[in-house]
Each structure stands twice: as C-alpha cells, then as structure tokens.
Image (cartoon, one colour):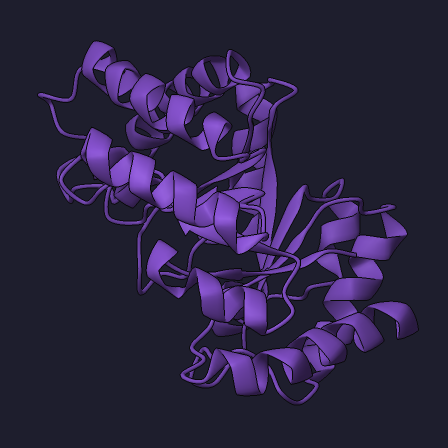
Length: 255
C-alpha cells in the first residue's frame, strides 16, 4: 500500500521528509504555471526523490461546467495542456472533484445537469486516455457541491460514462460528513483511488477512527490495488507525517 499526501509543490520537501511514498499535486495549479515556473517545479519534483503519482483539483474555479457558455472545445484545450504536464510529471491518476466547477445552478434541472456531467466526464476520460491517465470521480459532501454527493451516485456516473479509464474515488471525510457507510464500496464494485482525513477538523489522522477500518476492509474485499492519499491539514509534516503513515499502514494490515 502506497500512502501519499495532498499538497502544493512548495511543500514537496516536507512531504518527502515525512516518509510519504508520493505527493498528490493540484492539476489546476500545474496548468496555470508559466513555462518557466513549470520547468523550475518539474526540476524540484525530480530533485525531491518523491514521485507525483496522483493529481487532484482538475479544474480551476472559473471553469463552470454547467455554464451555457462552456464550450467542450475550450474544455478540451485546457485538458490537453494540463494532462501533458501531468504525464511529464509522472502522474497516473487524476481526481475529478472540482466541486465549484460542477455545482449545478438553481435554474438547471438535476436530470439535465447529470446528463451534462456524463458528457463532460466522457470528454475528460477520452482526453486523459491519450496520455495514459486514469480519471477518478470524487463524490463530495453537499457543503462543497450539489452534484455527486455519494459514492453510489459516483458509481452511477462511472457506469454511464462507461470508459475503462474513468473510475471512482472514495474520500473518507466526505463519506463521514454525509453519514454514509464505507462498507457500501464493496456493493458498488470497488474504487480506484482513496482520500482519507479525520471526520472532525479534516486533519491528517494521528489516531484511528472506526470508519477507517470499515473503509479499508471494504477496499480489501474488492482486492484494491490503488493508492491512499491523505487529504487533511498537517501543520508540521516532518514531525507528524511519520505517525500518520505508520497508523494507516497498520490499519491496512489489520483490516
């Protein structure tokens, strides 16, 4: 089991010092870098000795997927630029969370919004396939968006897109906030990526929560082969990171 940490590139040395196996970087930040910034950050990544196996925050907030002016050609142009950099940086998995981008306007019916989400997710998947990238749909809690708020809803979106490189993510924090059962993952056919943080405070875990073991047991039931990324606050990564890594590896072995 490889355990990573979600952070921006300026924390890469701390992530490496904490003993994480990889860093999960934001796509939108990498796509916005100038060519000079990109080369400098790519060199910093290579020098750190820690890979960027996964990326999150696919879209910046200004890209609104349900906006009438949202053109698939422009979205595809952004994706090509972003995925080219993700691939060169070593990324294999990209998280489609982006709650602000996929928030349904009040004047758009749910059915119409879901059909649009299927269209966009298929466009993302088809573009990502050209770069050897797997997309994972991230269900978010209702405080962050109003579309795809459960792993079950995410599984429906995955099924409708029906592409081999468009899969599903489970985030323990969002599952816990919504009051869902982590054990449901097995019924839904499993996931391809995982995020984890504490229910209270959304912090990097230093102590076990009952739901962690339930989540890991469900993942093992489906022969999970993906990564686990910590997506939670940690002010002192070199100090507290090793304890988080050790805890999660222990819980995985015991699940």
